[in-house]
Image (cartoon, rainbow, N blue to C red):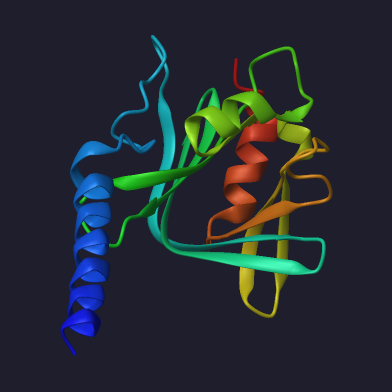
Length: 168
């Protein structure tokens, strides 16, 4: 009986240490820590959205997400379960000359998908769940054949503005 109790207490202690480390020590990529570029302007900022990452037969849903569209980047973050921060999921730049999709090295190092695209690669689409922005995640080893579906009532407006205005 004492051995069983000792094992259970050890497991609980390991989870408590992991939780404290994850919550207070580990530096997660968050929207608050993502610096804005000099002169970067926010064009759209919407929260409470559903985002799906689809491809290769599997789908992952991020609930309670935020879409921030600037004149240089598309940023998707998700409210973390504990705490007020929003964890970064996708950061795609459309001003760099390189539009090869996801940057594997940066994505693995930072803990979120970083990449580049052109506004022409965005698509306003609709399905039984509603209107959404189809964001291709690139052809790299990490995200080949995958895309994000960002569900927002403003999908057509956002895509049209980015494609029309050609930010920077």
